[in-house]
Image (cartoon, rainbow, N blue to C red; front, side, top):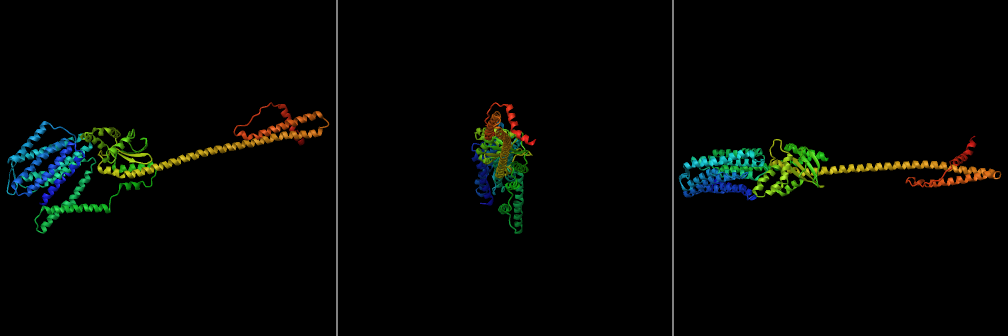
Length: 586
């Protein structure tokens, strides 16, 4: 078996890989079914019939193989029509469309298998000679594929962003397949050059792979990076291989063989990727998480941490706004940081976001608005519209709040963070690399937010502690002032009581002296002095009792004894008590 036949069969079998993966995810989908059938026809059936055509020496077998090749083209055109009718939305074909599709198709198949109007004969070298129906087949085939491409492009404005990207890959696959098939499988065979038809299945592999990727992908890569990678691949692998192979043949007078070119191409591909792997291992690329961690290494405050995180994300992704919400275990928004749309925090559906991440594990617990919109299509295909309605409120919230991406961040201490991103500045959808960037930094964001929350709790505890210290200090100051006031009152009381206690004692002393002096001469005065002594003693006892109960003043428990007082007598008693003192100074 030649190298070209081997490559044809290998690429034909590889054409099944993508469609089988897509079909296994949703076997009820009509578009997946038609894609799978397309891959069978353009893959192994087409590849094996071409390999058999080149391998066999039997003219009958070669004619049957050639008939299969062109039957495949008719079947591919019909399957492409039905596939595009079910992508991205199912639409019924009009009668005229089906009539113009099937009537020529049946006629072409009839002429291929039962007449000599399509392939007139095979010459001795197995080169087919084509009749007029061949040109009719070319016009019909190009018209069917071309019309479907035009209709797909025309409908781009009526579908969502994800379907638009998927359609772009579908159109790109059909165009790439046509670019490879038209010259090598249509034009050259008509003019007698039939040895390059093995390129057809390889281009069919490219077409099916592009369509499979577009149909099965929701998060697309950067097309510019892909184009750059393809160009670099051709510059470093394909073009040098062609130049080296021709140079070797020229220097050593060798006959150019396709297998030499293919061997060099595969060698250069291996070298190209080997160098890339070594470069990645030795040099590596900066981890966004490490960059973010270094950037906020010395920042502790929650507000400052959130501002730096949002600044970093905004610098990389350039959304129109970015916000960080921290929700408590009652699903109430506790903290809001960053720029935000007017109602992005009102009635935030944190439970729906968590349910979405649990229900769609393949979405890696990230909510993307375009994927929510696309969910309606897949739910209808899978006949599970409840799955779409379940998250309809989440979709409406994101549309109203202009939020395009929500990244949940699980935190400790009964909190959960949510990173909200608005639409991009240029209006593009977030591509796979950008969403992967968000997933890469999520753990770092979690650690930084937990650190900020912990620091805030410490600060809050310090403030609370300081408030308690201040309150206790104020209470102590009040107690000190009360104690000082009580001591002042006590001192004043002692001074007053000391004065009052001396007065009765002086009266007693004076009257005793007078008694000693006049005890024999004047009995009447004797009685008066005795009364004064008795009264002074009673007054002294009363004052002593009052002094003994003065300790009860602080509790307002002093016992008040009310009795009648003769003011005249009290004045005379006071004067009498100090008369000796007055006489001594005169």
